[in-house]
Image (cartoon, rainbow, N blue to C red; front, side):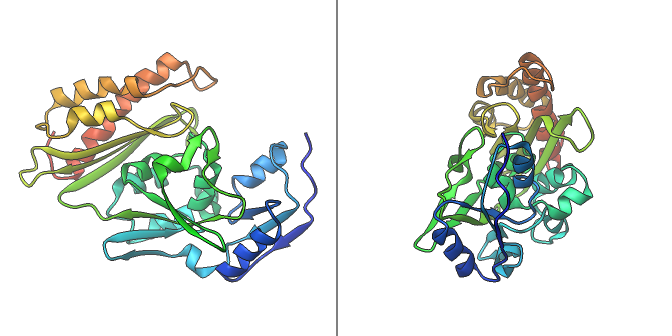
Amino acid sequence: MNSSPLQSYHLPLDLVSALTLLAEHEGSAKIVAGGQSIMLLLRQGFLSSETFVDISCIPELSEIATIDEVVYVGAAATYSSLESSPEIQPYSVLTDSLHVIADPQIRNLGTIGGALGHADPSLDIVPPLLCLDANVVLKSLDETRIVSLSNFHQEYMTADLSKDELIHSVTFNNLPGPHGGAYEKVSNVEGGWPTVGVAAQVVLDDTLSIISDVKIALAAVGDTAIRSPCMEKSLIGSVISMDSISKSSELVSQDIDPLDDLSGSAEYKSHLAGVLSKRALIKAINRAGGSL
């Protein structure tokens, strides 16, 4: 399959201009910023487009800010800008994942909006955002929609995104109380796609001995990145101990559906998910001020 030739390229300087272009081209236009995901699909012949709308010069789409206890990350914010942002530093679950995404060149170009729009279940950035209960802000000329990230990715490489919409930003709330997070992954090559990736985010009570809340999310074990409700349910309200963590990590296999592929067998990935869940959880608890 051959991709169609590039016929038009637009570089709007404001959001209304970008949304107007999307509306005018009635579904034939594709949004680009860093271009890391979409250009790969074009080269492989899985995607074609006559029109590209580059949003990288729209200032509000590159902003990273905290307003009224809510963190806002513009869709065109790059991985490297997230790595260096003081707004992101309190969320080690995110910074861990940013440090292991590909290489510096990719991180300098790749954007959070591009990743979410791509909807690949193996992306490192998605499980941490799931652990932070992130929302995706979508805009068209006529409407603004806010969709939880857990509902935004509907199935394999399919997102809840209309042809006249673009991803404007990702938001999540500041966390209350003592909290910590971690992301762990195993990959066949350094900086490569995860064979399995696991994010953990915990909130402890004031005694630092009980898990008040916990989120566990995984990459590369299903059609989308997914949470592990079985593991989470077993941990909420529990006293911190190696025994409870070990037992809960065994439950993660009930929530995942990995496939045999070149990265490894489904059985191997299920085992790996348990090992990485335990490792990420221990690190998250220690970072929150607990002791293991």
